[in-house]
Image (cartoon, rainbow over all chains, first blue to last red; front, side, top):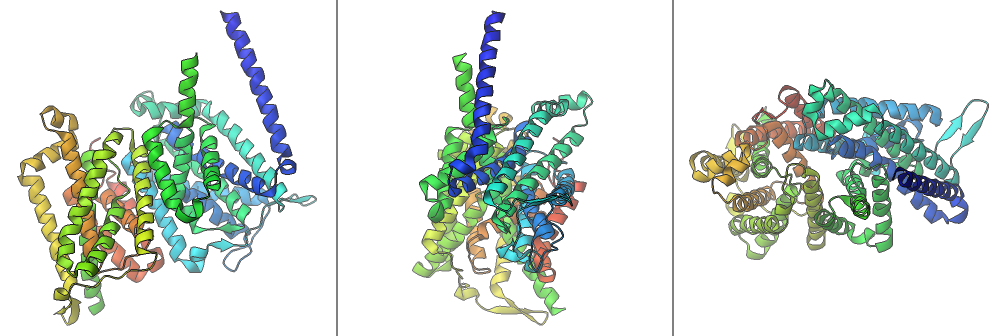
Length: 331
Length: 288
C-alpha cells in the first residue's frame, strides 16, 4: 500500500517537474516564438495575475472581502508616475528600479497600514463597504484634482524601469526586456507567496478565516495578523499597478475605479478562491475572453455584467473548484 | 451670510434625497443581510424613466407615482427570480458580483436608450416659483423635496414602530430563524423589502432629476454616498439612515462648495472618525 502510494507520488512529482521545465523553456523562448501582440497580452495577463494573487491573500486565505483593492493598484501606478514620470506634474526623481521599487513598496504599504487599521476594526459587509468607499474616494480625487493628478487624462510619460548600479546600467525599455522583467517579478512573487502561505503565519491566517474566535482564544492577536496581510496584499497590488503603468507609460484614474476591483474579484473567484494558481487562471481567462469575443469595445459593460451573473449562478466555486471536485471524485 | 443660508438649505435638500436612498438600502442590508450594489442603478433608472415619462405624458406627478411602482416591480421580480438563490451568511462576495453585474447591464441599457449626453429634467410647472427666506430667493421645488423627505421618514417610522409588519421586520434584523419559525413566510417579506427598497431608490431618482442633471456614472457616485450614509448610520436602522444622511449631505454640500477637489475625501475622513468611535455605525446594533 505504502509502496504504491510512493510510486504514485514519484510519478506525480516527475510529471510536475516535466511540466515545470516545459513552462520555464516556453517562458524564456516566448519572445522569439510569439508575435508582439501575444507578448503584450502575456505581459498584461501576468500583471493582472499578480494583482489577483494579492487580492486572494485577503479574500481566499484570510476571509476578508475587500472590494476596494484597485485603490492600491492605482496608488502603485500614481506613485511610480510621480517618482519616475517625465511630465509637468511629476517629480521625475529617478527611474532606477532599485530605488523606485522600495518607494512604491513603502508608499503603498503606509497607506495600506492606515486604511487597514481603520477598515479592519469592522468585518463582513462593513469591511467590504469601507474598502469600496475608500477606493471610490481616491478615484474621485484623481479625477477632480486635475492640478495634481492630471484629472481624467491621468499622468503620462512613465518610462519602463532600468537597473543602475553606477558602474553597470541596463534598461528594460524594449518590449522583450520588459517581458522578462515582468516574468521575473511574477515568479518571485508567486514563490514568495507560496512560502508565506505554507509558513506558520499563513496557517494562522487560514485559522482566522475558519474560526477567528478560536484563534483569539489560542492567544493569537488576530487583528495584527489581519493588518499585516492587508499591508502585504496592498504592497503587491501596488507593484502590479507600477508594472501596468510602466508597461503603458501611463497612470490612469481608471486603475482606481471599482470595475477594476470587481474584475480582480472575478479573477480570484473565477479561478478559485484560496488556491495559489486559481487567480492566475482567472486573470488569464478574464484578459483573453474579451480579445476572443471582440465585443469588448462596444458593449463591454453588458458583456462583463452577463458574465458575472452567469458565473455567480453557475460556478460559484470557480474553475479550480470544479477541477478539485473532479480530482476528489476520481480518487 | 446669504450664501450660507442657501448652502444650508441645499445641503438639507440633498440629505433628504440621500435619506430616501439610504432608507431603502439600509432595509435591504439590515433585514436581508444582502449587499446591493445596484441600488444606485435603481435611482438612475428612476430618473431616466421619469424623464421620458414627463416628456411623453407631460405630467411630473404621474411620473412621480408610477415610476417607483414600475421600478419596485422590477426589483421584486429580480429578487424572486435570482437573489433568493444568493442568501446566506458567507455569500456576500457572490451578492456583490451579482449586483455589480446588474449595475453594469443597467449602465449599458441606459447608454443605449438615453445616450451619454447630460439630460436635464424641468422642474414641475406648479413648483417653478421661488420663495424668499431671510432676503434670499429660494426655489419652491427644493422646499417641497424637504417636505417629501420628512413625510417618507415619518411614514417609514410609523411602519416600523407601529405596525405588525414593522415588528416582524425589526425582529428579522436580530433573528431571522425566530421569525420564520413563528410561521411567517420570510421569502415573501424579502421580496417585499427588495421591491420597497428599489421603489424608494426610484422615487429618489424622480425627485432628484430636476435638482441635478442625469449623466453616465451618476449611479456610482450616488451609490458611494449612500453606502457612506449606511456605514455612518448603522445597518438596518431608520434613525441611522436619517441622521447619517444629514451628516453626509451637509458634509458633501459644504465640502463641494469649499474644497471641490477633495470633497469626497472629507466624507471618507468623516466615516473614519465615526467608525473609530463606533465600529457598527452611530445607530447600528453594537453587539456582534
